[in-house]
Image 1 (cartoon, rainbow, N blue to C red):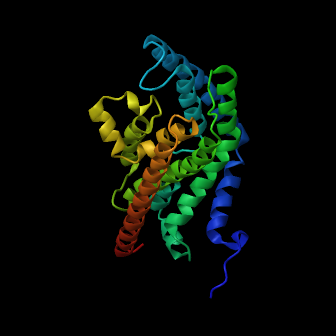
Image 2: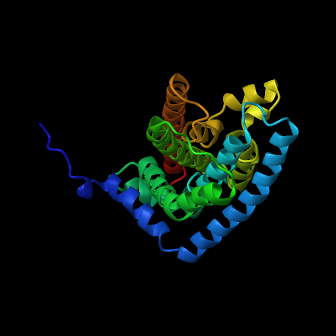
Image 3: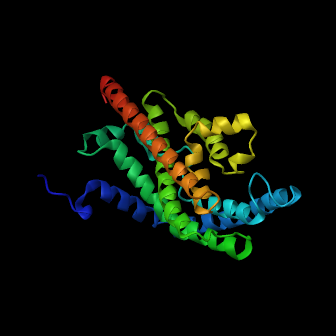
Length: 272
């Protein structure tokens, strides 16, 4: 039986740690991100709070406190969930450096995704937690009383971060077929934030648009984790959210794996 590799020696663990450490090298950028989160959190919280109040104290199942939780938890996730479409893979494909990645005895997909997930996990500390504290202190955010919401919420949060970076990787592989793939990234970004629940809860959408959003992986990146973390969804509903997220993670990773294999063959045909 093959002995297990200690985590410290596992190359994929090291990619995760490297991403975490690498992101910690930019404290001023992290501080600027937190300030931006807090500023837009106040503005967004005021707008969404006014919408709830104008609806008689409840809007699509949200009260003032739960809407504030949606706002501030969402702001806290902005440093960890990638909705913006850009990736290091795009640059490496365009420059040809990805050929070196294929020569390494590790999965190109796993190395890129895990590095980015590590960066996202670091963002939870200097941006995620302070944003939540600000929401509790001045935003009127209500925390769930059920301890299971935190445990399931943490799992949902990790799945959301992983799905977002796995999707970005899959989008980046378009560079194997396109001379310039930034247009694909911009197209992706134009839908990701809307359907992820970056601006408003997706439950405020008209039925046809909500159905369309739920047919994409985007709600699994932000809306579903926020639902579970805030206690908006509990019990069987929370487990259903986790199941949907796990399914989307498997689908997105499979897509990224297939496009990587196809892209590698194309790169070799081109003499890369």
